[in-house]
Length: 128
Image (cartoon, one colour):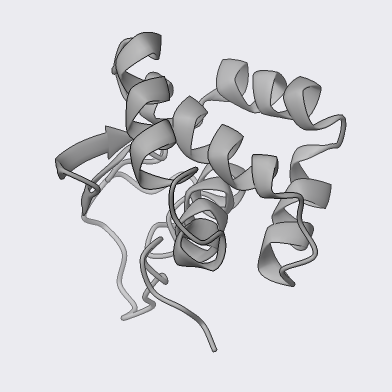
């Protein structure tokens, strides 16, 4: 995982690459009519609209290189057909990574130069 916040994780039917780049974050804000940090806060405290979960994951798949039609199909099958709580932590992790970058790297450091043992919560982990 680099500073550009791309991550490859097992999810749904396989292993997929996710990335919310600037373009996808703008699209997310427009789709949800809210700023990225507002959406992140709502995902974090589970006060979100369910479409914020699906939009976040779909756009992260597209940002990771998946064609939009395939991303939509995965989200329809593995997000919209499941209870919202099943994917809210995952969506929060993806958006948090996009907004803050990986927690184990300091801005300005080359990859692998971090000297402390700081860790980041995986998009699939709960911080509770």
